[in-house]
Image (cartoon, one colour):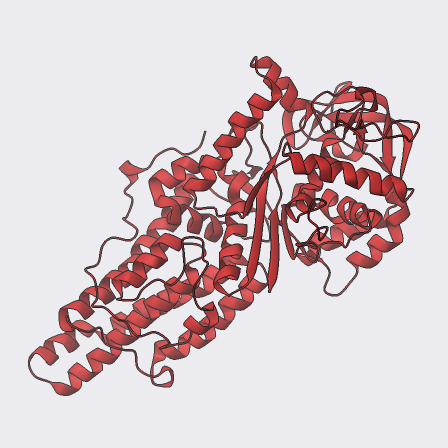
Length: 542
């Protein structure tokens, strides 16, 4: 099965914060889960590089816009690599094939009669683009952008090309009203339905005189603004940054250069933040329909990472550095904590202290200690061959696993990543309580004294624990890919997937209780998640 997954693309105007990469970590986990399930996955993420703010920042630093974004994109790619992000393509809106895709979308909508010339007058955010009056914060005679504190809005009046969004009002309302709706969670769909029902206004898709951007391919008289040699008529202006940016998902699907048109489209899942829901759940489907293309199958809208009740952002100075997080927690620890600490369907408060607490509690103490105890006790009592698990029906942990894997799989299918890991870590807690109740150290002492029944019971208890560790690490691998493989090696199993989750048997098959037999002795345990003491903590907030 083909599966096309995208994230929003980030402005390449600074280094990323953990809040910027939060949705990329989540999307990467989904991509890995899908690959491990046997799907043919295409995972797209990248950067948005055409904006007035970027051109201004580049000039202030004495750089060309291209050199400026090249430097910033390198920071994104470096941080994502540290977090083990595994996109099939990292797209940049300065890529040559994206220029072709954006211009082709303009031509198609123009041919459909959905683009016309008009005049724009209103507020403009240098970081983000045109805004409605309800999207501004008034300060004296001026205004600032609510999403970019301290960024003054400009009042613009210019001739632009407009897209006939109003022509798609009924179709958008019907699309959003489907059951289930393609926009999730449901309350985010309801927000967009409310917006659409207020009446839609056409929106600008071009800018006058902006040199940094994709050349608009049509002149005011309707003729082509692109010469045979590819040069553009500057008087035609540029494509407005938001219209251009949305089209990256089509570019990543192969549009329009692939012989098949767009072989990966429509997207199965597009993950975005709540602040850009309107662009993706209202503007974007209409743009696609105008060009004769399908809307995405699902758009998932996540919330914000909050610090003391405020949205994390570089402009507020309250963000967490992802490189600091990886340095302190390791890549697996940083990935896990981000997805456990913040619900994937709403806002979540997060701090460096809460991250450390979560890491120490759930990774170092609970899971790391469980694996360490199970392997140590099994290696001590059964040094040659790891004991096998009992039949699932005869094992409390085997019975618990049947319910856990169903809950975890269902949560992943519903993009509830916090619930996916939550279900698995409930079983971690169950397994630790199982150790305390079964007291394998007492069974080991009795077995050593010659008690055959105690030895048989010990074998079953430790076999069940080892199997639980195998299965939890398997199903948590999309969040903790390196540690999951390490756990399997400790347990005497060969990790069947490559570093991005390709190549092994289907996850469902390996996820059966007792599905694998260890082909090597247990390895000596090592600290999977070393506990962090307070004096080791690094202030990750900048």
